[in-house]
Length: 500
Image 1 (cartoon, rainbow, N blue to C red):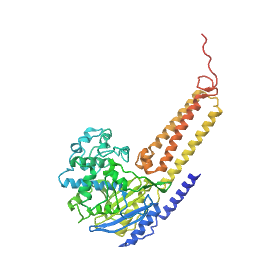
Image 2 (cartoon, helix red, strand yellow):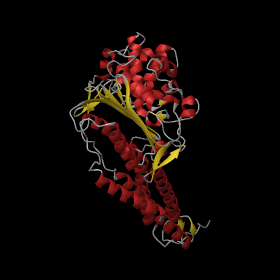
Image 3 (tube, helix red, strand yellow):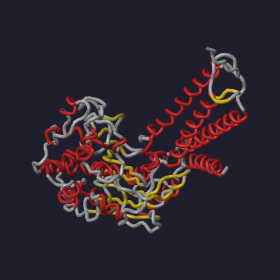
Image 4 (spheres, one colour):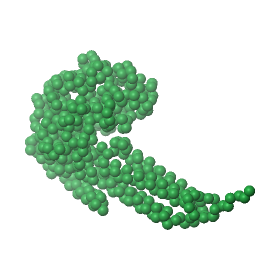
C-alpha cells in the first residue's frame, strides 16, 4: 500500500502542478534585473524538485550575472565552482575543437572518416567509406543511436575501443541523406581528433580550446573528472534521489565533459562576437544551420538553431543530459548574450520542464513571458500501470500455484495444450513489449536504471512475474490428476503396457 500511496501523491502533485504551471508567477519585463532571473530559476527548481542549480548570463566581455542555489549530491552547498556533468552540451565543445583543428590545417572537415581512421567501418562497408567529418558534426552520417554502446563504465573503455563494435552496426540511412541524432557521431569524431593529432582527446581539448578560453577546471579526463564530480540525482517516484555518478571515458566527446558553470560560461564567451579563441568566420561556420529538422528548427555543426520561446528572435543552443545531470547553453545573437545552466537532477519524463528553466531565462532577457510546461502525466500513469500489471501477474501466479498444489481438474490434453499455447503467446508478447518500453525514452533496458530506476524496477518485476507465470502454467499443464506427465486419451487414465 505504501507504493500506491506514493503513486497517488505523485499523481495528485502532477495534476496540481499542471494547473499552476499555466500561470507563471513572474511576469516578464523589458529589462529583468538579476533578482527576477534568480527568483524564476529558484521557483522552477522547487517546482521540479531539482536539489541544486547554477546559471550565468554571459556577454562578450564576460559574465554579466551568475548565481547558484541548493545543494549537491553530498549535501554541500552548490556554488559557481561546483562540478556538473555537461551531457550533450559536450557536443558543441567538441565541434569547436574540430573547427579549430581545421583552421590550423590539421583536419579537413570534408575528408572521409575512413581515410583519417582506417579502422572505422560499419556493417555497410561502402556506406561507411563515404562518411565525412562534416556529416559526423551535423548528424547526417547515418550512424544509429547505438544505445547499448554508450553510458557504460567498465574498465578499459576508451574512445577508440568502441570502433570495433561499430563494425556490426547497420546504418540508418546513406551518408548525407538525413539527420539522425546519435552520440556515436561524436564518439567517432573524438577518434578522428585523436588520430589527426596523435594525442589523447582530453589533452588536445585542454591545449587547443579550454586553456586558451581561460577554462581551468573543465575535465575531459574520466578518472580525474570522477574525483571532483559530486553525486547527481535521479527521480524516484517523483522525488530526486542521489546516486554515485560515473563518467564514461568512451563517451566524453559526446556527453561526459565535467565542469562548473564558470567553465561553461567561459566556453560560451568564445561563441560570442569579440570573445577569445575563435574569429567571426569560425563562429559563422559553427552556427550556420543547414540541416532542416522541422518548422523553424535546424542543426548546424554541433548546435541547434531555432527561436527564443515566445518570440521570433534567433537562438543558437544545445541541451544536454547525463545520468543525474542536465545542462543547457543558449546563444542570443541579436543581443550578444548567452545563458548557461547546470542542474544536478535528470529524468526522461522531466526533460521538457528542466529545459524550461534555461529557456525561461532567455525569454525573460528578451522581454517575453517564460513558457512553463506542466508535469508529464505519462510518468505517474506509467508507474501506476506497471504497478497494477505486476499485481495482476502476481495474483495469477499465486492462483496457478494454488491450483497446482490442490491438483488439476481432469481435462483433455488437447484443451490443456491450447490453453498453454495461448498463455505463453500472450506472456511472450507482453515480455517483448516490456523489454522494448525503454526505447520510448531513448535508452536500452540495461541503461534504464541510470535514467528512471523506478520504471526499471517495475519493468523488471513484471518481466520476472511473466517468467514465473509461464513456468507454473507449464507445470500445471504437465501434471495430471495422477502425477507428473501427460498422456493421450481420457484424463487420469494410464494406458496399460503391451504384453509380450
